Amino acid sequence: MVIVLFIIMLIGVLLGKMKVINSESRSTISFLIINVSMPMLIVSSSNLEFNEQTKNESMWLIIMSVAAFFFSILLAQLIFKKAVPRCATVFSNAGYMGLPVLNSILGAKGLFLGAIFQMVFHLFTWTYGISLFTQSSKFKDSLKKMINPSLIAVAIAVIFMLTGWKMPDMIQTVLKMMGELTTPLSMLLIGATLSQVSFREIIKVKQIYLVTALRLLIIPAFVLLFLLFPTIPKISVYVVFVINAMPSAAITGILAMKYNNDEKLASSIVAFSTLISIVTLYLITDIIDIASLLSLI
Image (tube, rainbow, N blue to C red; front, top):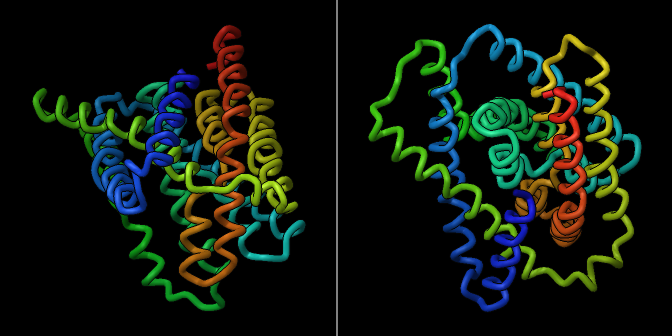
């Protein structure tokens, strides 16, 4: 399945080079993903049964997610002095890549747990992430930014799962069909974005190699240590592992642009780590395949 995702990404690169997908259409696609298709994909996952097992998986996922964030923050604080590499180390591309990849590898359960991770992600983004780029940030403003369509969709999905309510078949079909747009749109968007980057310039920036190694190798390896604890649900470990193995988040570039803090470096790190993730994602799927054979998930 991963190779299919990257073929779609290459199509996005081609469309970007041809100017079919330009800066304006990239903004439109981004809006559709964040505000339409992804929330619908999350809500469509609410047909899962929210039993004691799911509650336990969700609880452990939140605990591991917080632990992974604190670990990555500690690494970033010790190694880097500037805001951009710190932010790029701590935050992975959980939305555009993480959720689609989880959906393709682990199905509806993986998608739902990944959406739970998003709540923790936004909490850290609009608190720690903002603090990296500005000395003062109003709590109310940060709270407003945390409230987004995906989080609302998670709340709706949880309500449906807790109450056992079921949507009419027609509505469920609409949500499923619209939600399935998330993966191809996300891959096209990432490919089109990569098409605008000069990799000859990127490879000259030394910091990107260290950030990429931390983001794609060290932090995911830390998450795998939770497999040593038999009481922790394996699927929860793999969800946190997969999301933390994603490249640096686009939010790094967005915050750098907003606060005039080395936008070029931010874009370079995001682009380079995304390119390298083409290789590391193969390793991820191999690990999960092996785990499946050993009945670990």
